[in-house]
Length: 226
Image (cartoon, rainbow, N blue to C red; front, top):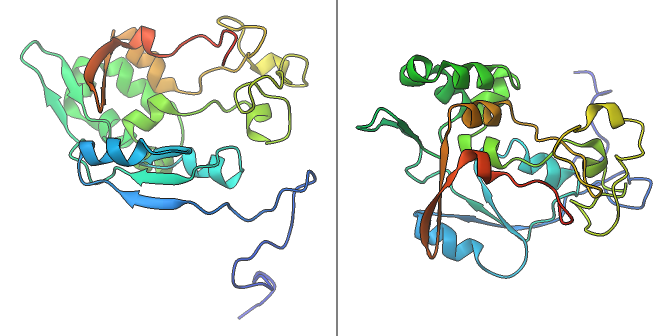
């Protein structure tokens, strides 16, 4: 067996560091598995940074990059939110945990909202779509390289630090409309464009009840506090 691809430190300890002194080793965090929405709300309402874990295709990347620093991840994958249901008025109710692949390939979605199916299939690879969830797609963080590098000025990552993208090398790939003097990042989701086009609605549920938000109003412009 060739050994040239094996790491010298087999226990997984960090053997490198970023230029700004950060370690390559992920920060530790607590893990909890929620058995019900109520348990998920109560677990995630504690002190410190706590996030829900579903597909994890974006969240875990940002944790590894040290951009997000959770004290706890609350696993919601066992909640009963993986169905696509037909409503009496002809609309569809899509569970938060329906995978992007299942949503795009669902016969009712393809029949009633083909633009949504096409938008989902236009984004990401098959492997990512198999894992990513509908809610995770909607809630994913921006893919601005200045947000993700962990060291550049970014008002999203560190409020008040500035926006390196405005005068940066990659200005041409950022937003033209819907920007502010504090952020010019674009939303990364193709699916969300389809959701807005069909007039979708988001049902948000929390410890104090639930409410419905028109999809076009769900994502806010950056303003002074992106």
